[in-house]
Length: 166
Image (cartoon, rainbow, N blue to C red; front, side, top):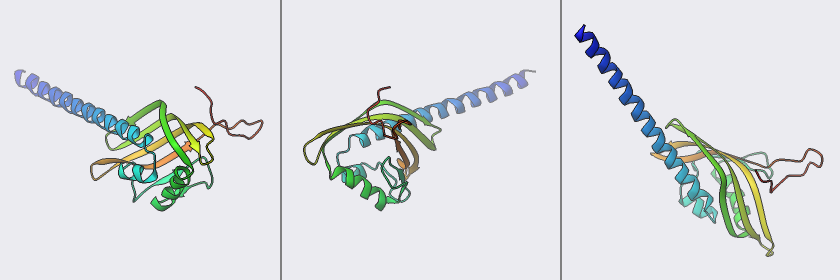
């Protein structure tokens, strides 16, 4: 009887240790992803975003809210980002909301982001966007391999609602 109790106690202890380790690993991964997202939103150029390691250069797809339907591959994503950054000055982004979910292998971030910038002709601009990022580890680092950016559309006018508040 005593041996059975010790056996089940050892199994319970091993299970608890495994679950604790997984919870710690997921918590660490969640913080790493959150930190990366904050670095990426602060980028003020395509080169800066690339140097921060925001995107998986070998495997990236972006669904932006501007055409075309899809930017697939590093070259296409860079061109889309260059189009924005080359036509914007004083870009500042902040999270209105951010939620990170991860199992330590994959991560999903859904957020509401607010950006302000000055257009090329000096006009102040702003947009509030819905963004979902899917991440995986590449060489031990979290990288975004898919981003989906959207804005709500008013069904009566068909126009994008760029600055809704939550």
